[in-house]
Amino acid sequence: MTINEKLSEIKKIIDEIKSITERKGNDNVLETQIQEMKNEISRLKKGIGETIDDLDEVLGEKDART
Image (tube, rainbow, N blue to C red; front, top):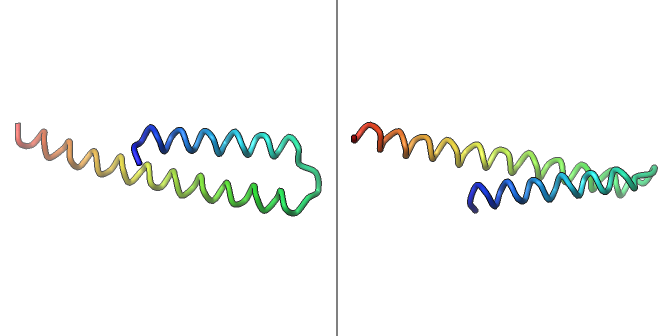
């Protein structure tokens, strides 16, 4: 998954959270969905961070060779 795809997925999840929050009452199901989406955002952020670190490493190696 590319960085743009990951960012796009995060944006989609954030929009879903906003939508659910606007409709939210005292429903435990919605609370669970919100928590699941927050967990997914955290997972995606971690993946993006790892991808950026990998890119920095690759680019750093290229810089060292030039």
